[in-house]
Image (cartoon, rainbow, N blue to C red; front, side):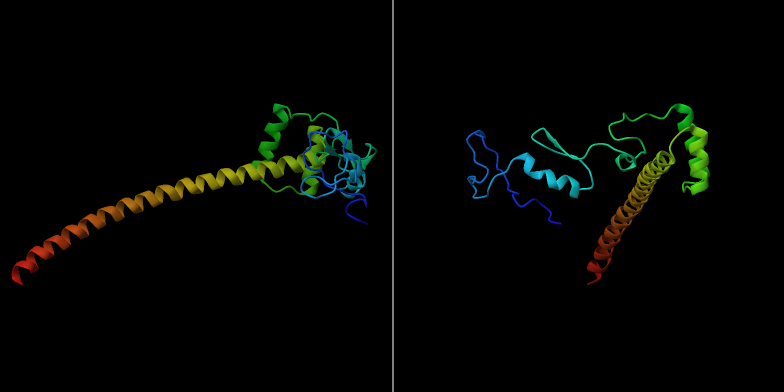
Length: 174
C-alpha cells in the first residue's frame, strides 16, 4: 500500500486558486493538489478524519471501530464525572494507584461508567500525581540546595577571613 495516492502533490499558499491547474507548478517548483487528493490517506491513518481547508476526509462512524479513547461513540459529547464518581475514584486511587482488571470492572459497574473510562481516569490521575510528586521533590531539593549554599557562603567568608589573618601573621614574620 502506498502512503499517498499516485496523484499526490503539495500546494503552497496561493491567492488565485480558481485558475490553478492540478498539475501546474507552484512558485517553489512543486506540483499542487486539492484536498480531495488526500482521500486515500484517511484510510491509511486508521479511520481518523483529516481536514484540509475545511473539507472533511475520513470514514463514516460504524460500530466498535469508531469508539473514542474514553469508550464513547465518536462524535458523542464527552460526559463529565459527577462529584460522587470522582470521590469514589479518588478513594480507590488512595488505596492503590494501579488498577487490576477485576477492580476496574467493579468500579465501572458501581459507578455506571465504561471500564475504559475508569482506566483512563486512573492513568490521568497517576500522571497528575507524578507531576505533583516531582514538584514536591524539586521544592525539597531547592530548599536543601539553598541551605547548603548558605553554609558554603559562610564557610567561604570564614576561609577568606582566616587567609587574611594568615597573611598578617606570616607576612609580619617574613
